[in-house]
Image (cartoon, rainbow, N blue to C red; front, side, top):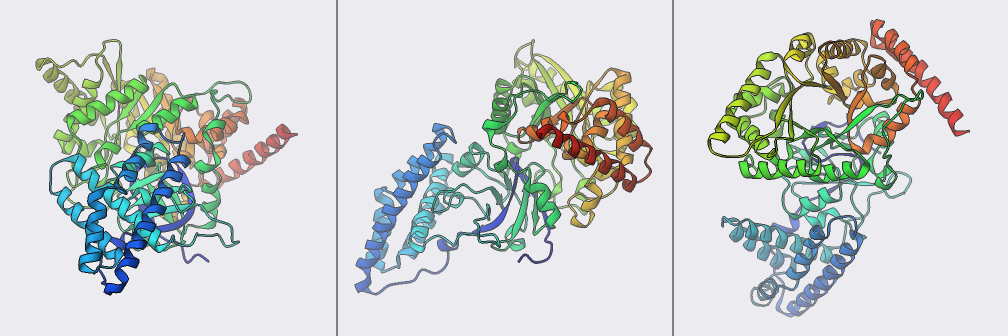
Length: 586
């Protein structure tokens, strides 16, 4: 039985999506500690154990490669060939055998010492290929050790059925990602601040919801703890309330196989077609969006590259990434780097702030570190090389027009400098503001006169309007439905955009939730930004909304003076929708 409600931990999303499951802790203690010694007459037995473990490891890798065939690109699957080769590497085998025979080290200690020696040597050289080889050798060593020790017992639910596993580790290894039967984990959470290398490639290719940089992870979770991983929002809920498990459990990625996702735009019951675009944060997510039928990326989160390594990415790395994004999806809106002090970027923050979400975050962090802003803008400009292309930039956490103007001016200066250097940076640039602060709502009439489009981040907006941290379990009830005062804020933004002739899109779970969708549509929203994993649920919810009813419900909700009044309206609407859904099935 689970203990009391645990903390909500934050991290950086590497691959979005939802996962509900039991914690499987992975530590690399087998590669540390004082090595034991064996008597001389046990040396031959240790060598036999070594070769038997090598044989089992090779069989595991062969089975694993077959298991992921078709799930990951062939280039990524070839990573396992590298591991197979290392299991036969003469230097690795000879070093382990010599330690066992000449120093009488126990096999586990011999393997750990060889791995540690390689790791120490390769990390001293400024060569990425050699460093990657050290990581691969560590993975191979772990695989052999775990073949010696045997796998941990499977995690089960209370009824004895096998539970989905959410892997929690200090750092990630490929051998950590699969159990003895090579079953894919439902989610991955990593304590260290970066996820790079071959394990990262497999995690992204297989679209496993993944968080990195989760401070205090292993101190907060125990083996078998029930957790909800919302990698899209960067959250891990430890031992959550039952109602949250039920809420998230119905929408996890495992319940939404790609082959069955809708490829048609959502339409309301009275045949009003809604506009939708994809929300992505990596190239695999972008590819998934394209496979799912999205032709545009309404918001591309640019944080991933900044947290793969400890230092910010180079200009060339950013240009290559943004060019690849535009090659996949020419119509993409890039959100500028949005990182608060919880993410541990020492080049952006000196330490964790007392109130990170209200601190140096969004555009204000970029303006405070102009070199980071200029490098990102220069990379975005360089990624657009044709005059027919358009570069769309969304500015996060805008408060007033000065921030918008300063970003515009910086773009102008960077473009002028690139042209002076003879670097191609063609194409029109359009600027959008992400409305997530009460100040942006109050000043929306001024903002829309100076921007080209608006995106409302509804979840963040409700959090700040209500001054209620959505990551605080004690305040979760305040985010169960759209608050009437937040709906009024959304209505004001929509009206201002209509007057100024600007497009307005909405993102966030609140907007897509079936019980809130009628209110959102009723105030005039027609454009939505969502992850591919949410598309089926959104199509289904839209199908049960009639626009005349939506306008009526929205007007009632706009007049409500409390969340309780809104819930009464929502409950009545939900009852009607349930009855209609039942009629559709009959």
